[in-house]
Each structure stands twice: as C-alpha cells, then as structure tokens.
Amino acid sequence: MALLVLKFGGTSVADIDRIRNVARHVKREVDAGNEVAVVVSAMAGKTNELVAWAREASPIHDAREYDSIVASGEQVTAGLLAITLQAMGVEARSWLGWQIPIRTDSAHGAARIESIDGDELIHRFCLGQVAVIAGFQGIGPDNRIATLGRGGSDTTAVALAAALNADRCDIYTDVDGVYTTDPRIEPKARRLERISFEEMLEMASLGAKVLQVRSVEMAMVHGVRTFVRSSFDVPESINSNPEALQPGTLICDEEDIVEKEVVTGIAYARDESQISLRRVPDRPGISAAIFGPLAEANVNVDMIVQSVSEDGSRTDMTFTVPDGDLDKAIKVIEENREQIGYELIQSDRGLVKVSVIGMGMRSHAGVAATAFRALAERGINIRAITTSEIKFSLLISSEYTELAVRTLHATYGLDKAF
Ligand code: ASP
Ligand code: MG
Image 1 (cartoon, rainbow, N blue to C red):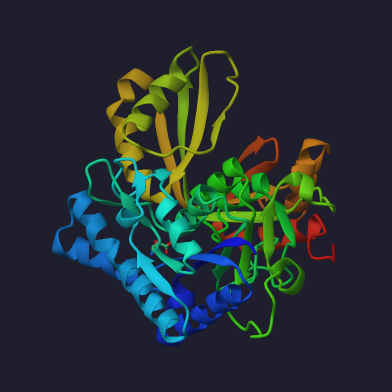
Image 2: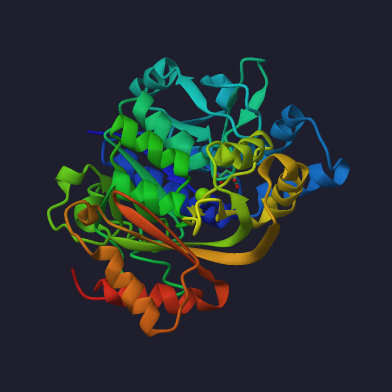
C-alpha cells in the first residue's frame, strides 16, 4: 500500500467523458490498495475564460476578487470528479483550498504555499475516502482565497505530496513525459526515462512547459519523487507500478539516475527582447544605475552582457527582458538617462533564447564550444550568451528557432537511443 497524490491537468478533465477516464485511473489505484489524493485543474480553457471575464469587467481589478473568480474553475472539476467516483462506488469527497486548509502568503494572483494541514485528509484516508482537491488555490493571511499563479495545480500536488509524506506524486497530463526537446519542433525528440530535479528545474525555468517552475522547486526541496505521465490510453488491467509498466518520466535525485548523459535536453523560450545601451560611461555604479530602477519597476531582466571598453571610458551594455516588459523598460531607462549617461538606446523584440541543459556540464569541458561551432556552421548569429553550472543559454533571432533547436539536439546526440 502506498500513499499517492495524483494530479490531472486541464485537458485530462476537459469534459465529463475525460473526467470519467480520470475516475477510472483513480479507481485503479484505490483497487490496488493505495490511499489516494487527487488534485485537479480547471477544464481546459476555463481559467483563460475566467481571466478574460475579469479583464472585461474591469481592466484594472482587485487581486483578491481576481482570485475568487479564477479559483472557481477548479471547484467545478473537483465536485464533478467526486460525484463521478461516488457513482463508480468509490468513496470520495471534494476539498477546496480553505477547507484543508492550504495556507499561502498574501501575494494574491501569485501566492506561495506556506503550510498545509494534512490531518483531516489522513483521517479520511483511514476511513477509505479519496480526497479530491481543487488545485491552484489556498487561503491567504487575510482569510481570502489566494491563487498560486498560472499552472499552479502542479504546485498544489507536489506541496500536498510533501505535506502528506506521499510515496509519489503522479502528474497526469496530455504528454507521456518530459522530452529531450519540444517534439513539435523536433520530431526526433525522445522521452526521458528519468531526469534529475536540478535539470528539470532548468528545463522548466528555461521554457519547457510541462510543469510549473515552482512545483519543481518544491519537489527538489522536499525530495518528492514526481512522475510525469499521460492520462490517455491506459489499459484498464494495469497494476499500480507505473515506473515498471507505463511510460512516463520520473523526476528524481541525481543519484537515482544510472545512465548520465552530458546533455539532457534543449529548451527554448520565445518573446524575449534585447536592449542595448551604447556608449555608457565605464565607471563603478553604472550597473546599479541601470538595473536598480528596472528592478524597482518590476522589470524582469534576464541575460546581461557588458563589453569591455576600448579606452577605459565608454562601453556597451546589452540585456534582455520579456517582450511584455520592453516598453516599460525603455521608459524607465529614458527617465534615468541623466544618471546613466548613455548615448544611444537600441532595442529588438521577438527574439528567442535557446538553452542547453545537462548535469554532465559540471565535469565536461567544451560543451558550449561545440554548440557555438554547430550554430556558426549554419550561419546562426548568437546575440548574447549566459552560462551556469548545468546549462548555457543563447539569444538568437526567432527565424532560426527550429534550426537551432534541431541542430543542438543532433549535435549532442539526443536523437539517438540512450
Ligand atoms: N487552472 C489553472 C491554470 O490554468 C491552474 C492549473 O491548471 O494548473 O493556470
Ligand atoms: Mg499545467
């Protein structure tokens, strides 16, 4: 017997038929003798619709009311799954965030989970009841509903698995695992059997959309073995050991991965903007003068490249921000023109950041150099580079996205059998 947290995303609960399919998955685990908590998202597209309604009613709105509106989608699916399970003879009860309670901080719209009281749920498991939990929501210090940011049901599931000390957290979704890169761009992308928490965190942060970044952080901190698997086409007769019987990707400790590759995956993120400040005075405090006001304005600066000045007096400073922040960033820089003292500001939007991720980079030299050569051979210009211990990222023009991803995928042998 194991304690499992199962999470089903929007496409897996998109209509009543899909919810019945989810109920069958749950029943399979219950019949195998497991204690089960299920976290559900809203039906596919529902949260977008709710967000749009809030914006239509009032473009600028109270974040507490936004939360009360957008949290409603999960209330519907939790109730629907509970009655579907009951109709199949499985004892089940739905739970909203405040009823458990899942306590969050006060950042409405992007709240962080602070604590989960699992006592009542554990009591219900002992009575043989399945808990169906509305994802994406909790209760803030102001006693009002708080939501966890888009994609937040993943975080509900992992946090719950940590709080209940679950044996595993299964994330059921519309893909059958984590791939070496986006299969829509590179059909030769392969499903990874296992990926380390650290690599998954980089993949998610750098553009892979399988899991909410915060849920991976949470899994890493609490050591929650998280299994990403498909909610579709599962034979009825399967037993409860998915690691042996069903494809999927296990996110786990590095030590649990036997075959280690130098590079594990290629991620990409669109909609990046580049800003270049030309002929900035090269003096102490110049970075603070540029990035201080941007941080205050909540502009998310990512890559930063500063050139060495020729004569020790003037230099160029290039950095990237999300496209959505470009206008605000330029405004902030122009307002601070005097303090910064640049000569010219140039910008470009719609760029792409392609990232190469792998634990093996810690012990192998020259991994990035291989990429530079491969891209150069295909005439792809690299506009900015950042590196860290287990990844490097390259900023390129968007027309090269597919070519760059495919080139890098092949360069590191990711299309070959592991
Ligand atoms: N329904 C929410 C969203 O669409 C939360 C989730 O699905 O994880 O962002
Ligand atoms: Mg999701």
